[in-house]
Length: 303
View 1 (cartoon, rainbow, N blue to C red):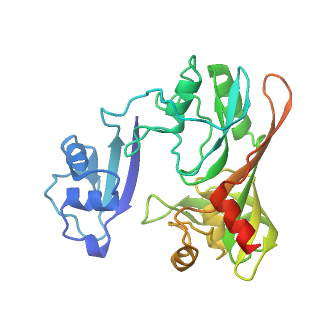
View 2 (view 1 turned 90 degrees about the horizontal axis):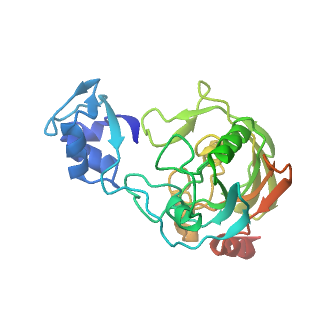
């Protein structure tokens, strides 16, 4: 499995060795890891392979083809799961904040997939990605709530189809700094021009639509319900930032001063409810995950 990230060298990075620059940009990976990628020709500067000692200049474009390291393998791990629904076809859990969904460089173990393999002894390696068996959608590491997985190849195809056809209704709860305007927000998104691990609102991006409703508000914060019409990466976090009412605790898109004031280290974002028709039984499933304790504490204290 590989993934490609592109980035542009900033003024303060000009003249820094390529391997050192990359390890600073991607702190979850070691300098040795990037040296290995450079030697394999998996790092391009302005479209050309470079050596690790070479020093890019401001404005240069670097493409990194991330590759899984040998220690990353699928292993079943006895990690407890809070199960919301399960049958022969699919499984839904309340994912805790802090759990990564699938193995990847920087997170080789203790993921939801490792737990899923232990819980489902006969899990079919469904899907095209061998390191993401059963995965049909994702939640960010620090987002909690309803997460659905397929137990068979047939179920994987069916659930992926439901997601792509927007037949799975997903509702989130977030604590926002300030109070966003209510209603439907249509704000296209694409990858940020320079910070390539982030997303941003951009008129040339892909369609991104969120339905926003304020449930409660105080002088500083609001409890917001968001219905996702589309499911772009980081959509809620980016949309609320765009409205200048970022998710409280969000270290990437949020307000640093507000995060410090409330002493929070993860975004207050929770996948609260999911509703869809079971693709095999025809049953209407309404899955609901209770708020995690840290988010419930914020709600009780401020609303």
